[in-house]
Image 1 (tube, rainbow, N blue to C red):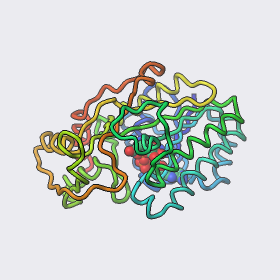
Image 2: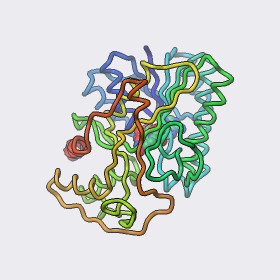
Image 3: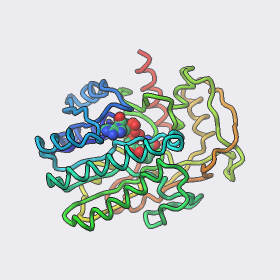
Image 4: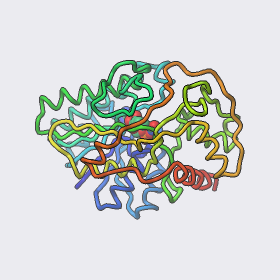
Length: 333
Ligand SMILES: NC(=O)c1ccc[n+]([C@@H]2O[C@H](COP(=O)([O-])OP(=O)(O)OC[C@H]3O[C@@H](n4cnc5c(N)ncnc54)[C@H](O)[C@@H]3O)[C@@H](O)[C@H]2O)c1
Protein backbone atom coordinates (compact mmCIF):
# COMPACT_ATOMS: atom_id res chain seq x y z
CA UNK A 1 0.00 0.00 0.00
CA UNK A 2 1.43 3.36 -1.06
CA UNK A 3 0.52 6.21 1.28
CA UNK A 4 1.06 9.93 0.80
CA UNK A 5 1.52 12.00 3.96
CA UNK A 6 0.87 15.70 3.44
CA UNK A 7 2.79 17.59 6.12
CA UNK A 8 4.78 14.41 6.69
CA UNK A 9 8.03 16.09 7.76
CA UNK A 10 6.09 17.80 10.59
CA UNK A 11 5.77 16.63 14.17
CA UNK A 12 2.89 14.15 13.99
CA UNK A 13 3.49 13.24 10.33
CA UNK A 14 7.10 12.18 10.91
CA UNK A 15 6.14 9.90 13.82
CA UNK A 16 3.35 8.41 11.73
CA UNK A 17 5.78 7.85 8.84
CA UNK A 18 7.99 5.81 11.19
CA UNK A 19 5.10 3.64 12.41
CA UNK A 20 3.89 3.03 8.84
CA UNK A 21 7.33 2.19 7.43
CA UNK A 22 7.93 -0.17 10.36
CA UNK A 23 4.78 -2.02 9.35
CA UNK A 24 5.83 -2.36 5.72
CA UNK A 25 3.81 0.44 4.12
CA UNK A 26 5.38 2.52 1.33
CA UNK A 27 5.39 6.11 2.50
CA UNK A 28 5.88 9.26 0.43
CA UNK A 29 5.90 12.73 1.95
CA UNK A 30 4.64 16.04 0.59
CA UNK A 31 5.55 19.18 2.51
CA UNK A 32 6.41 22.80 1.75
CA UNK A 33 8.83 22.80 4.72
CA UNK A 34 7.13 25.89 6.12
CA UNK A 35 7.20 24.42 9.63
CA UNK A 36 9.59 21.49 9.34
CA UNK A 37 13.06 20.59 8.16
CA UNK A 38 14.29 18.44 5.30
CA UNK A 39 16.73 16.71 7.72
CA UNK A 40 13.73 14.97 9.31
CA UNK A 41 13.91 12.58 6.34
CA UNK A 42 17.43 11.49 7.41
CA UNK A 43 16.18 10.94 10.95
CA UNK A 44 13.26 8.83 9.72
CA UNK A 45 15.80 6.84 7.70
CA UNK A 46 18.03 6.38 10.75
CA UNK A 47 15.11 4.91 12.71
CA UNK A 48 13.54 2.80 9.96
CA UNK A 49 16.42 2.23 7.47
CA UNK A 50 14.11 3.60 4.78
CA UNK A 51 14.10 7.12 3.42
CA UNK A 52 10.66 8.15 2.22
CA UNK A 53 10.43 9.76 -1.20
CA UNK A 54 9.95 13.47 -0.63
CA UNK A 55 8.04 16.02 -2.72
CA UNK A 56 8.59 19.66 -1.77
CA UNK A 57 5.21 20.92 -2.86
CA UNK A 58 2.83 23.50 -1.42
CA UNK A 59 -0.79 22.32 -1.33
CA UNK A 60 -1.74 25.76 -2.61
CA UNK A 61 0.18 24.99 -5.83
CA UNK A 62 -2.53 23.02 -7.61
CA UNK A 63 -0.41 22.58 -10.79
CA UNK A 64 2.39 20.75 -8.96
CA UNK A 65 -0.15 18.81 -6.90
CA UNK A 66 -1.97 17.67 -10.04
CA UNK A 67 1.33 16.58 -11.61
CA UNK A 68 2.21 14.57 -8.49
CA UNK A 69 -1.08 12.67 -8.57
CA UNK A 70 -0.86 12.19 -12.33
CA UNK A 71 2.58 10.61 -12.02
CA UNK A 72 1.96 8.52 -8.89
CA UNK A 73 -0.75 6.12 -7.85
CA UNK A 74 -1.46 6.49 -4.16
CA UNK A 75 -3.81 4.18 -2.28
CA UNK A 76 -4.40 6.52 0.63
CA UNK A 77 -3.60 10.04 1.79
CA UNK A 78 -3.08 11.15 5.37
CA UNK A 79 -3.58 14.89 5.44
CA UNK A 80 -1.50 16.48 8.21
CA UNK A 81 -0.46 19.63 6.34
CA UNK A 82 -1.81 22.77 7.88
CA UNK A 83 -0.91 25.80 9.92
CA UNK A 84 -1.63 25.26 13.60
CA UNK A 85 -0.51 28.26 15.68
CA UNK A 86 -3.67 29.41 17.47
CA UNK A 87 -2.44 32.90 18.41
CA UNK A 88 -1.07 33.60 14.94
CA UNK A 89 -4.37 32.49 13.41
CA UNK A 90 -6.14 35.29 15.34
CA UNK A 91 -3.67 37.86 13.95
CA UNK A 92 -3.61 36.44 10.42
CA UNK A 93 -6.98 34.79 9.79
CA UNK A 94 -6.77 34.97 5.98
CA UNK A 95 -3.43 33.16 5.97
CA UNK A 96 -4.97 30.34 8.03
CA UNK A 97 -8.21 30.07 6.08
CA UNK A 98 -6.34 30.19 2.78
CA UNK A 99 -3.68 27.65 3.69
CA UNK A 100 -5.82 25.15 5.57
CA UNK A 101 -9.07 25.35 3.61
CA UNK A 102 -7.75 25.97 0.08
CA UNK A 103 -4.98 23.43 0.66
CA UNK A 104 -7.60 20.81 1.58
CA UNK A 105 -9.86 21.73 -1.35
CA UNK A 106 -6.93 21.36 -3.75
CA UNK A 107 -6.09 17.98 -2.25
CA UNK A 108 -9.70 16.79 -2.55
CA UNK A 109 -9.79 17.95 -6.19
CA UNK A 110 -6.80 15.85 -7.20
CA UNK A 111 -7.89 12.86 -5.10
CA UNK A 112 -11.26 12.93 -6.86
CA UNK A 113 -9.69 13.45 -10.29
CA UNK A 114 -7.24 10.55 -9.92
CA UNK A 115 -9.59 8.29 -7.92
CA UNK A 116 -7.57 8.12 -4.72
CA UNK A 117 -10.51 7.29 -2.52
CA UNK A 118 -9.10 6.96 1.00
CA UNK A 119 -8.34 9.92 3.23
CA UNK A 120 -7.43 10.37 6.88
CA UNK A 121 -7.67 13.94 8.15
CA UNK A 122 -5.95 15.51 11.17
CA UNK A 123 -8.67 17.28 13.08
CA UNK A 124 -8.56 18.56 16.61
CA UNK A 125 -10.39 18.59 19.92
CA UNK A 126 -10.81 22.30 19.26
CA UNK A 127 -13.88 21.50 17.10
CA UNK A 128 -15.78 20.82 20.36
CA UNK A 129 -15.61 24.55 21.07
CA UNK A 130 -16.27 25.78 24.58
CA UNK A 131 -17.51 22.54 26.17
CA UNK A 132 -15.58 22.56 29.42
CA UNK A 133 -15.00 19.73 31.91
CA UNK A 134 -17.05 17.09 30.11
CA UNK A 135 -15.66 13.89 28.66
CA UNK A 136 -15.96 14.66 24.96
CA UNK A 137 -17.44 11.97 22.75
CA UNK A 138 -17.65 12.08 18.97
CA UNK A 139 -21.39 12.70 19.15
CA UNK A 140 -20.98 15.86 21.22
CA UNK A 141 -21.91 19.02 19.39
CA UNK A 142 -19.15 20.67 17.35
CA UNK A 143 -18.69 24.15 15.89
CA UNK A 144 -20.08 26.23 18.76
CA UNK A 145 -17.82 28.51 20.80
CA UNK A 146 -14.67 28.00 18.72
CA UNK A 147 -12.58 31.04 19.59
CA UNK A 148 -9.95 31.20 16.85
CA UNK A 149 -9.59 30.86 13.07
CA UNK A 150 -7.33 27.80 13.40
CA UNK A 151 -10.10 25.91 15.17
CA UNK A 152 -12.65 27.19 12.67
CA UNK A 153 -10.59 25.75 9.80
CA UNK A 154 -10.69 22.30 11.43
CA UNK A 155 -14.45 22.54 11.94
CA UNK A 156 -15.03 23.84 8.40
CA UNK A 157 -12.86 21.13 6.85
CA UNK A 158 -14.88 18.50 8.75
CA UNK A 159 -18.05 19.97 7.19
CA UNK A 160 -16.43 20.05 3.73
CA UNK A 161 -15.45 16.40 4.10
CA UNK A 162 -19.02 15.45 5.03
CA UNK A 163 -20.44 17.24 1.96
CA UNK A 164 -17.71 15.80 -0.25
CA UNK A 165 -18.49 12.31 1.03
CA UNK A 166 -22.20 12.64 0.23
CA UNK A 167 -21.32 13.46 -3.38
CA UNK A 168 -18.55 10.84 -3.53
CA UNK A 169 -19.92 7.77 -1.76
CA UNK A 170 -17.00 5.61 -2.88
CA UNK A 171 -14.65 7.58 -0.68
CA UNK A 172 -13.58 6.36 2.75
CA UNK A 173 -12.79 9.32 4.98
CA UNK A 174 -11.60 9.09 8.57
CA UNK A 175 -11.48 12.19 10.72
CA UNK A 176 -9.15 11.88 13.72
CA UNK A 177 -9.66 14.46 16.44
CA UNK A 178 -6.37 14.75 18.28
CA UNK A 179 -6.24 15.96 21.85
CA UNK A 180 -2.85 17.32 23.05
CA UNK A 181 0.09 15.51 21.44
CA UNK A 182 3.34 15.54 23.45
CA UNK A 183 6.62 13.64 23.55
CA UNK A 184 8.97 12.38 20.90
CA UNK A 185 10.20 9.12 19.39
CA UNK A 186 12.04 6.98 21.97
CA UNK A 187 15.19 7.18 19.81
CA UNK A 188 15.29 10.93 20.44
CA UNK A 189 15.79 11.41 16.70
CA UNK A 190 12.46 13.04 15.87
CA UNK A 191 10.24 15.29 17.93
CA UNK A 192 8.50 18.63 17.90
CA UNK A 193 10.71 21.40 16.63
CA UNK A 194 8.67 24.27 15.21
CA UNK A 195 10.50 26.67 12.89
CA UNK A 196 9.21 29.74 14.70
CA UNK A 197 8.06 30.63 18.22
CA UNK A 198 6.25 27.60 19.63
CA UNK A 199 2.63 27.77 20.77
CA UNK A 200 2.15 24.44 22.49
CA UNK A 201 3.16 23.82 26.09
CA UNK A 202 5.85 21.18 25.60
CA UNK A 203 7.94 22.99 22.95
CA UNK A 204 7.82 26.10 25.14
CA UNK A 205 8.95 24.06 28.17
CA UNK A 206 11.76 22.67 25.99
CA UNK A 207 12.90 26.16 24.97
CA UNK A 208 12.73 27.39 28.58
CA UNK A 209 14.88 24.43 29.63
CA UNK A 210 17.53 25.31 27.03
CA UNK A 211 17.41 29.01 27.93
CA UNK A 212 16.09 30.06 24.51
CA UNK A 213 12.97 31.39 26.21
CA UNK A 214 13.65 33.02 29.61
CA UNK A 215 10.54 31.81 31.40
CA UNK A 216 7.31 29.94 30.95
CA UNK A 217 4.06 31.87 31.19
CA UNK A 218 1.26 29.87 32.80
CA UNK A 219 -2.03 31.37 31.76
CA UNK A 220 -4.14 31.41 34.92
CA UNK A 221 -3.93 29.51 38.20
CA UNK A 222 -7.49 30.21 39.26
CA UNK A 223 -9.36 27.61 37.22
CA UNK A 224 -11.65 25.20 39.00
CA UNK A 225 -9.05 22.41 38.97
CA UNK A 226 -7.03 20.89 41.85
CA UNK A 227 -3.99 23.16 41.37
CA UNK A 228 -5.82 25.96 39.57
CA UNK A 229 -4.02 25.52 36.23
CA UNK A 230 -5.69 24.23 33.08
CA UNK A 231 -5.97 20.47 32.53
CA UNK A 232 -5.55 18.76 29.18
CA UNK A 233 -5.58 15.26 27.73
CA UNK A 234 -1.91 14.93 26.78
CA UNK A 235 -1.31 12.01 24.43
CA UNK A 236 2.12 10.63 23.53
CA UNK A 237 2.81 11.33 19.87
CA UNK A 238 3.83 7.70 19.24
CA UNK A 239 0.45 6.51 20.55
CA UNK A 240 -1.16 9.08 18.27
CA UNK A 241 0.90 7.87 15.30
CA UNK A 242 -0.22 4.30 16.03
CA UNK A 243 -3.81 5.54 15.96
CA UNK A 244 -3.31 6.30 12.26
CA UNK A 245 -2.12 2.76 11.58
CA UNK A 246 -5.22 1.46 13.37
CA UNK A 247 -7.42 3.81 11.33
CA UNK A 248 -5.92 2.55 8.06
CA UNK A 249 -6.86 -0.99 9.04
CA UNK A 250 -10.48 0.02 9.61
CA UNK A 251 -11.33 2.38 6.74
CA UNK A 252 -15.02 2.40 5.81
CA UNK A 253 -16.98 4.13 3.07
CA UNK A 254 -18.44 7.46 4.19
CA UNK A 255 -17.08 9.58 7.02
CA UNK A 256 -15.94 8.04 10.31
CA UNK A 257 -14.82 10.22 13.19
CA UNK A 258 -12.66 9.24 16.17
CA UNK A 259 -11.19 10.99 19.18
CA UNK A 260 -7.55 10.15 19.76
CA UNK A 261 -6.86 10.92 23.40
CA UNK A 262 -6.13 9.08 26.64
CA UNK A 263 -9.32 9.92 28.55
CA UNK A 264 -7.16 11.31 31.39
CA UNK A 265 -6.16 14.83 32.27
CA UNK A 266 -2.94 16.35 33.54
CA UNK A 267 -2.56 19.94 34.68
CA UNK A 268 -0.09 22.39 33.20
CA UNK A 269 1.56 22.66 36.63
CA UNK A 270 1.89 18.86 36.87
CA UNK A 271 3.59 18.85 33.45
CA UNK A 272 6.04 21.49 34.66
CA UNK A 273 6.77 19.63 37.90
CA UNK A 274 7.14 16.27 36.13
CA UNK A 275 9.55 17.84 33.63
CA UNK A 276 11.56 19.40 36.48
CA UNK A 277 11.77 16.06 38.30
CA UNK A 278 12.82 14.11 35.20
CA UNK A 279 15.38 16.67 34.06
CA UNK A 280 16.69 17.62 37.50
CA UNK A 281 16.40 21.22 36.39
CA UNK A 282 14.06 23.91 37.65
CA UNK A 283 11.96 25.76 35.10
CA UNK A 284 11.43 29.47 35.66
CA UNK A 285 7.76 30.31 35.28
CA UNK A 286 5.33 33.09 36.03
CA UNK A 287 1.56 33.04 36.42
CA UNK A 288 -0.09 35.46 34.00
CA UNK A 289 -3.79 36.20 33.37
CA UNK A 290 -5.98 33.61 31.66
CA UNK A 291 -6.05 33.70 27.86
CA UNK A 292 -9.44 34.43 26.34
CA UNK A 293 -10.99 31.22 25.07
CA UNK A 294 -8.92 28.85 27.25
CA UNK A 295 -10.92 26.22 29.11
CA UNK A 296 -10.34 24.63 32.52
CA UNK A 297 -10.47 20.98 31.54
CA UNK A 298 -10.56 19.36 28.10
CA UNK A 299 -10.42 15.60 27.66
CA UNK A 300 -11.50 12.81 25.38
CA UNK A 301 -13.74 9.86 25.65
CA UNK A 302 -11.52 7.57 23.55
CA UNK A 303 -13.80 4.52 23.84
CA UNK A 304 -15.02 4.62 20.22
CA UNK A 305 -11.45 4.31 18.91
CA UNK A 306 -10.77 1.56 21.46
CA UNK A 307 -13.87 -0.35 20.39
CA UNK A 308 -13.83 0.13 16.63
CA UNK A 309 -10.14 0.67 15.82
CA UNK A 310 -8.82 -1.64 18.51
CA UNK A 311 -6.46 1.13 19.59
CA UNK A 312 -5.68 2.74 22.89
CA UNK A 313 -2.97 4.98 24.29
CA UNK A 314 -0.33 3.06 26.25
CA UNK A 315 2.36 5.58 27.06
CA UNK A 316 2.43 7.95 30.04
CA UNK A 317 3.27 11.60 30.61
CA UNK A 318 6.52 10.41 32.20
CA UNK A 319 7.35 8.48 28.98
CA UNK A 320 6.57 11.60 26.94
CA UNK A 321 8.86 13.73 29.07
CA UNK A 322 11.71 11.19 29.04
CA UNK A 323 11.47 10.97 25.25
CA UNK A 324 11.35 14.76 24.98
CA UNK A 325 14.52 15.00 27.09
CA UNK A 326 16.20 12.43 24.83
CA UNK A 327 15.15 14.47 21.80
CA UNK A 328 16.50 17.65 23.44
CA UNK A 329 19.84 16.07 24.22
CA UNK A 330 20.05 14.77 20.65
CA UNK A 331 19.37 18.29 19.35
CA UNK A 332 22.15 19.68 21.53
CA UNK A 333 24.79 17.34 19.98
N1 LIG B 1 0.25 19.32 17.42
C1 LIG B 1 -0.97 19.53 17.90
O1 LIG B 1 -1.13 19.96 19.04
C2 LIG B 1 -2.19 19.23 17.08
C3 LIG B 1 -3.43 19.03 17.72
C4 LIG B 1 -4.57 18.77 16.96
C5 LIG B 1 -4.45 18.74 15.56
N2 LIG B 1 -3.25 18.95 14.97
C6 LIG B 1 -3.18 18.92 13.50
O2 LIG B 1 -2.34 17.87 13.08
C7 LIG B 1 -1.66 18.23 11.88
C8 LIG B 1 -0.18 18.05 12.08
O3 LIG B 1 0.24 18.83 13.19
P1 LIG B 1 1.75 18.92 13.64
O4 LIG B 1 1.75 19.19 15.09
O5 LIG B 1 2.52 17.76 13.12
O6 LIG B 1 2.18 20.27 12.90
P2 LIG B 1 3.53 20.61 12.12
O7 LIG B 1 3.50 22.08 11.87
O8 LIG B 1 4.70 20.04 12.80
O9 LIG B 1 3.32 19.82 10.74
C9 LIG B 1 2.51 20.31 9.70
C10 LIG B 1 3.33 20.27 8.43
O10 LIG B 1 2.52 20.76 7.36
C11 LIG B 1 3.34 21.54 6.51
N3 LIG B 1 2.47 22.44 5.75
C12 LIG B 1 1.67 23.44 6.24
N4 LIG B 1 1.00 24.02 5.24
C13 LIG B 1 1.35 23.38 4.10
C14 LIG B 1 1.00 23.53 2.72
N5 LIG B 1 0.16 24.48 2.31
N6 LIG B 1 1.56 22.69 1.80
C15 LIG B 1 2.44 21.73 2.20
N7 LIG B 1 2.83 21.56 3.47
C16 LIG B 1 2.29 22.38 4.41
C17 LIG B 1 4.34 22.22 7.45
O11 LIG B 1 5.53 22.63 6.80
C18 LIG B 1 4.59 21.14 8.48
O12 LIG B 1 5.71 20.33 8.14
C19 LIG B 1 -2.06 19.68 11.59
O13 LIG B 1 -3.10 19.67 10.66
C20 LIG B 1 -2.54 20.17 12.94
O14 LIG B 1 -3.47 21.21 12.81
C21 LIG B 1 -2.12 19.17 15.70
